[in-house]
Amino acid sequence: MAFPGSSSVSRADGPPNEPAAGAGRDGVKAGLDLPHPDDGSLARLVAGRVRRHGKVTSPPRPPNFAALFADEFFSLQRVPAFAGAGEETQAAIRAACAQGVLDEAYFIEKSGLAYCARMLLLAEDTQTRQAFALMGADEAAHLAWITAYVPEARRTDAAHPFLKLVAELIEQAPSPVLVYLLQLILEGWGLAHYRDLAAAAREPALAHVFKTILKDEGMHVRLGAALHDPRKFSDAERTLTRDALAQFLTLVRCGPLSVAGALAQATGAELVSLHEALAGEAEAARKLGLLRQLMRAEGMDWAGAEMQALGLFAPMTPAQAAALLR
Image 1 (cartoon, helix red, strand yellow):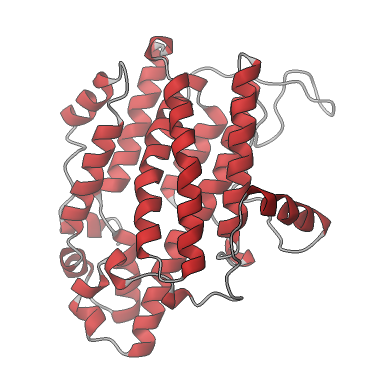
Image 2 (tube, rainbow, N blue to C red; image 1 turned 90 degrees about the vertical axis):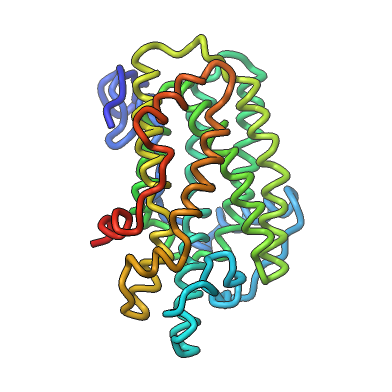
């Protein structure tokens, strides 16, 4: 994705107005690959402050990933290949699916820290800085709670295209685009997603984590609505918004490919039949409908209209989706 324009901040250790290597427009790096150890004085300091943010029970170490979510959340009960698998294989599939959604939640909360750092730099008044500092504190607490369910070895591998898209936006996109895409659409999506996760979580401590996060996410969306101003979009920013939405919708259109991939790897079943058994088209259509609603922010009707014209609210067929994993 190409981003319009560029800006920079001065550095004490290099030429003025030259951003640090790997940093974005304002010197902020998304940092999804940054190490995140469990021990050390900083870890203890963060844990102490997070306990003041909200009371959340730590999970058993290590968590039993296969027992964290109901099968219905991943539609596993629909799949003949899963029903016919042995207990060990079923447990491995459940664990892989659970780790997938928890890893994604971890990296989204991790990216939220960088988003708040960038928006603090871009803020044009003190109240906006205060708002993003408070939001950043929320994101730090959410990250700490989710981290307990993500092994340290998995905390630096953000290889999914969706996470790469979010990181690139955080590093390079201007403020109006960030507020609309990440704080209205992505945070709005997060409200529905965390609500579903809370309902599906079989471990009470994990369900409580998702419910506690939900309380903060609503404020984040309200902040985005207060900051959103469609009049601030330049032609270049409209183009960037359109391109990012097209990428995001394309990823959603393919349906539950991560679940299908876990099933295929464990059972050897064919991807197209797995996608069909998971009702992948219907699931993608449901999520695309939610995204279409979230795009209808003030003055942004053009965004949904352009996505409709490109046919991006239509889910992929099982064959089209399966081809992406081959």
